[in-house]
Image (cartoon, rainbow, N blue to C red; front, side, top):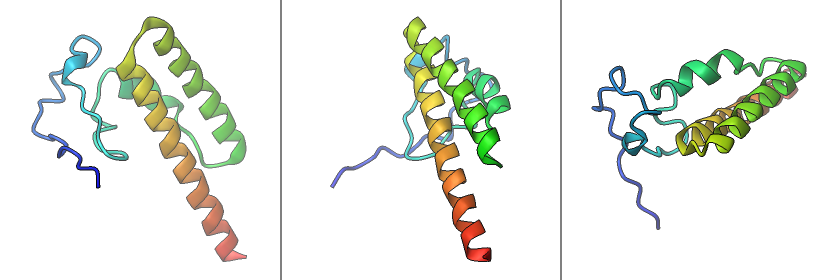
Length: 104
């Protein structure tokens, strides 16, 4: 059984620029901390839209493009954040689809 370090929510997230201090980045389980990591949250979140299939395609294409930009720069934190936002979008889209089926 894998053990995961507990996510440290006590970090001063408002004061940390994770692009400047990537060594402080924590890889949390699932969505832990994803909305706390700046400047990446502010760069990715405006594009995160999964309410409809068309919006999901557009959103995922833009976030994947950001992932590739981060990769080109060798920015692991940016890549991981983009991946996590994409993963959250897939989860949300699947939940919405499941909820629609249940209403039928």
